[in-house]
Each structure stands twice: as structure tokens, then as C-alpha cells.
Image (tube, rainbow, N blue to C red):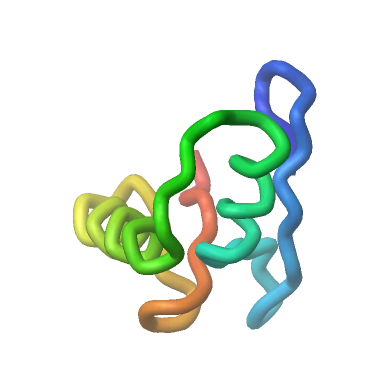
Length: 69
């Protein structure tokens, strides 16, 4: 997955969907930012975004994906 600035976020194929988890987000942040949220904070944020429809929860509490827009 590549953002609008050309930075790459690692994804894996889970249930035929390109998905990411908290560890992949953490790896991206380690390379791109000074932010250092914990894995648990990232999981909580992803879960919240899934509950609002901003993310799809591919596998409960673990894998997430961007919704089709």
C-alpha cells in the first residue's frame, strides 16, 4: 500500500484482501515518524476505526483493510 506521498505500508493478503495489522503500522511509523504508540494503542485505534466504518476488520482484533470507496 502506498500513501499519497509515496511512502509504503507493508500489507499481507488475508482472506483474499490486502490487509495490515498493528505491527505493520508500527513498522511504518518507525521509519516515517517520531510517533511511538504501543501495539495495544494501535490495535485499539484500528478497532475504533473499524467500528466507525473507516476501516474494515478482516479478522477480528488482528487484521484490517481500507474499505472500498
